[in-house]
Length: 100
Image (cartoon, rainbow, N blue to C red; front, side):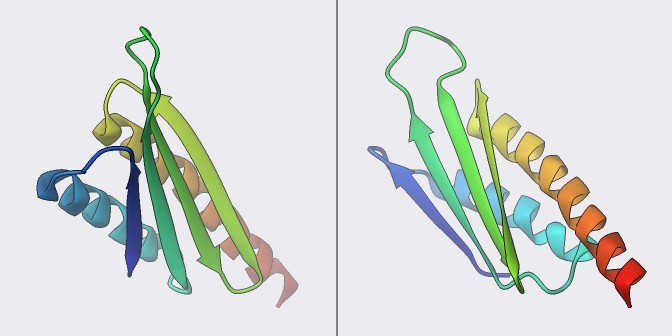
């Protein structure tokens, strides 16, 4: 799956990008009709430790899912966002099965 990753106001290193790609690829195990996914990485200028914002938008035929997580690290945000997206995709798949 093609993952478009954009980091806002900083450069994400290759290791982080690979990690995100690997996590997002797992979504295809749950729902194979994912068209594309966009990931936005932002760092908030606060004294708060949880200043990393991980936002993912996954497009599927006829719908799209957006998940936004704020964590201490982008990896943690990616894990939380992907597990949330997994649940949404499974729910969508079951809904489609029920209608067919």
